[in-house]
Length: 164
Image (tube, rainbow, N blue to C red; front, side):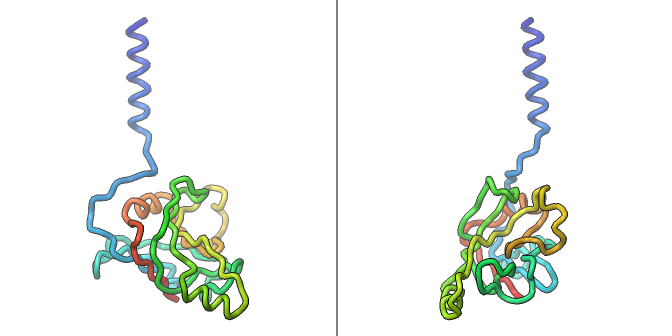
């Protein structure tokens, strides 16, 4: 009986060793900036002037133009910072940008609009698999595998520059 129990424990531990975690570690060069180019649907993780990683991205469902108000489906343009992370995101993993910034708030207030918020770089869960290229409400989307790398590489406080 003891042999059977030890065999069962060994089998369970072997199975667990094969399971992968969505939380990776990264020990390479620091990501000093994230660059997003909306028109080409590209995102670059930078260390100074060196490109560390390049990703194809999906954007808000109305990708042309700068985000101006809640619900417009646009991805904001400008300089932001990573200010939070969600390991339990509905979108696999996500890192938040500090939209709206002071400029966004002032622009929305002068137009009498709510600027919206909750803009993230995130993965793409199964339930959104048929959403096309630009399917988010204004966020920046990558594959779940790519998001695991980004989540490990990009630290809070990192500059994110989003261009037309």
